[in-house]
Amino acid sequence: MSTSVGIWSLKVEPSKEGVELMLDTDLRITNVALGDDDETPNKTGRTTVKLIYQTLTYDIDSDEEEQEDEDSEDGGEPRLTEPKTTFLGSLTCGKVENSTVDIFLPEEGLYTIIVSGENPVYLTGTMIQQRPPPGYDDSDSESEDEFDLGDIPSDAEVDTMEDDSHRFEEIEDGKPVNGKRAREEVEVDETKLSKAEKKKAKKRKGEDGQAVAAEPAAEKKKEKAEEKPKKEAPETKELAMGVKAKDTTVGKGPTAKKGKRVEMRYIGKLTNGKVFDSNTKGKPFVFQLGAGEVIKGWDIGVAGMAVGGERILTIPPAAGYGKKGSGPIPANSTLIFEVKLLGVK
Image 1 (cartoon, rainbow, N blue to C red):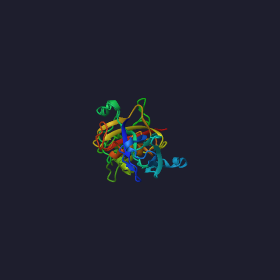
Image 2 (image 1 turned 120 degrees about the vertical axis):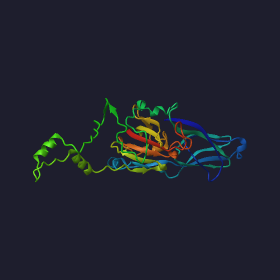
Image 3 (image 1 turned 45 degrees about the horizontal axis):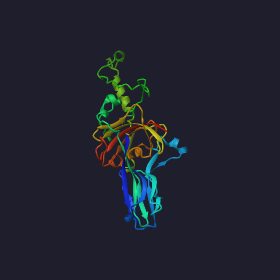
Image 4 (image 1 turned 120 degrees about the horizontal axis):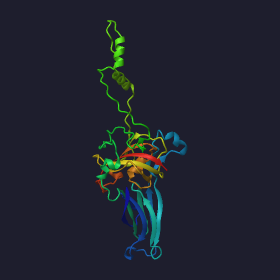
């Protein structure tokens, strides 16, 4: 993923109610200034620019409780903070007519700009959006030789997907890190007996003197399989902004929290199963959680994962690339990400 920027500007007239910013991408405000002479009726008075804001934060357990809770809790639920107020600058004609600032506003927050005085104010900044790398060819991402996806299926049905706990299996010296792969069970013809079973059958006789057949091995295996409890399907949780998360594997290591740098593997698909981006081998994808370096659905959905955990994220357009889309991703697309947390720093 790469970052693209675009210029942004807004004229705010003096009022008590102010102007609510409607953001569909992250925003960085860099300058606050007065307008031309004909737009500044008060040549001596002071004009003040105030920002009221609410940002996304996370409820996180204390360090003392983290270790005992990390196996049973997700670690943090996103929520909006209480409204806070700050001032971007105070401007006066002929003295201070502009103020340079560096204010980053994540898209998921709520913001209001209030101008006090008699003169309107112009805000300038840049819009920030996460995009796939330039020149990205979506046909390459479907190549098994390029990404070594192995037995990963081509579909991405969210509600019916089976528990694939080793889709991102790390390889060393040609062998899985976690040991040998489990052998597939071989079906046994229940009508046939082994030589040993036939020999036992000859020695066993019923009341009528006839040989009694031993119980087939296939029947014994079937009975044992029925005795084992069935594994429950992972639960799908709904997080902030409509993001859904389903843990296919629960990790046992450190927990991903806001401000931490996380190392990830991922496969990104559209709802029709088409892969638009992936990282399944080589150098992991690294970003700072909660810093706006990725789409909002990742900041929300990755929070609370433990190292070694695997999760399926369903990200609605508002928490993804929205109505504009990006590269191979059409506008208003719901995104499916299969992610694995490799490390937390």
